Image (cartoon, rainbow, N blue to C red; front, side, top):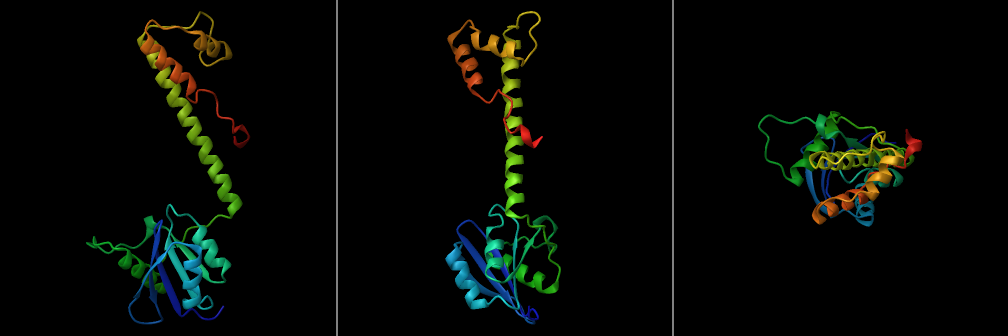
Length: 203
């Protein structure tokens, strides 16, 4: 790759990307706003180039698709860690344009704290792990809601039946409460994710 001469800051949002460009010297220049679409990003790289140009944006909800597209087009790209970015004291005025310019300047000065970008396979495994964690949390909340309701109503399982065993589950499905409204709550609770998450192979 040629010597870096162009530093591009991208303030990325769901629909748009604010672009700023810093060259070897001088202040970062506002380059306008483009749509956050692959074809618009391709056109941007055609204008600003790939060889000798580095792009940067902050990690966020839009993920790493932009990083991968820029790399696939032959340019270097850095994903910055937002929590570690330099913040000027008292600088509370935030706009997309100013954020993009700040990214370009910090990229040029070499002060961008970069994050590790996972491979697509690693990212997919992360998603699966998060899904399992969410399922476990939902399971625990559902169990807590139901057991607290039964405790409040002084409804107890038969002697010898331990909670959340197969026998306990069968007892819950056959349980008839005194009032229709409470029965609705019980039925809805049983329809909630009370069973153990099925993503067991992650554990």
